[in-house]
Amino acid sequence: MLTRRTLCRSLALGGLAGLAGAGRAPAAAANALSMQAAWVNDAEFMGYFVGIQNGFYKAENVDLKYLAGGPDVIPESALLAGRAGLALTTPDTTIRAITSQGAKFKIIGAQCQKSPIGVVRLASSPIKTVKALEGKILAVPPVNMAGVLGMLKINGIAKSSVRIVPYQFDPTSLIKGEIDASVDFVTDVPYTIGLAGKQTVSFLLYDNGVTLYADTAAVTDEYLTANRPLLVRWLRASRAAWVENLKDPAKYPTQFKNTWLSGTGRATENDIYTNTADKPLIDTPSGIFSMTAAGIAANIGYLKSVGIAADRSMFDTSLLADI
Image (cartoon, rainbow, N blue to C red; front, side):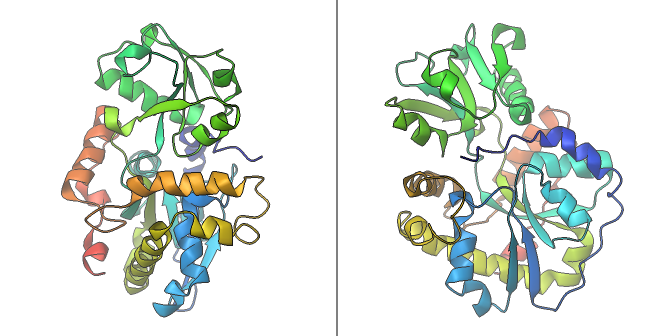
């Protein structure tokens, strides 16, 4: 079974240095758009599969080429190398590339209003708050270390008071009781742990100070200038497709098990679980992909608190206003 992202993108982004000034809008027909996903095909990207399969993009005159991600794919690199016009990223890595590598990026929408990364514990554990992590063993993937340290700092908890050990998105150690909690996708790993007969409880890093969007739609400045109408149509079609998908989170994982979702080793029930758990993180009264003033300010505030010089100019909401 393919596990969740284990690539330490905070380190891998160092590879963007040679590409930071090399972004070029891919030469393509006026309605063609290549989109780089952040990970392999699973329920996290169900809305795009629905949009392609059900003709939402075609109806908006968008010829979408969907590029699956994986452990060796850095979405921002796909933008700078011209392999994709749009990529799903995380705002911390994208904005760090802007501030430290000189990359010219804009974030034009947010699929997830809250990141699905959280602290997961067994239901029998007494860890109910961040404060309760003191004196406990917390397993943290390298890619999420910065977020965890930020959460501890914001909540006034000394790093030395929590025993942090490495984690590779494998819940076995939590199931066996070798650790007290782990940092993982709360939209995914509880399903796996449930198969072992264990129940879990979790809380989001977002709800404890790490106020970051997830799966942000990012483009280069150059591509945005050259293809603004196309990107507006992509946002409109993607919003409609996600609305359709979230009407019944069980429908499309079942329908796509032998097409979009084949070959991953994941059970259809796992994708239904994830699709259902993603709904409250994606759906919003402002419209899917929205970035409100308060939401952007929360992202900027957190990033500044951990030394990333984010500012409002890195988020472009004008396309959302046009859909």
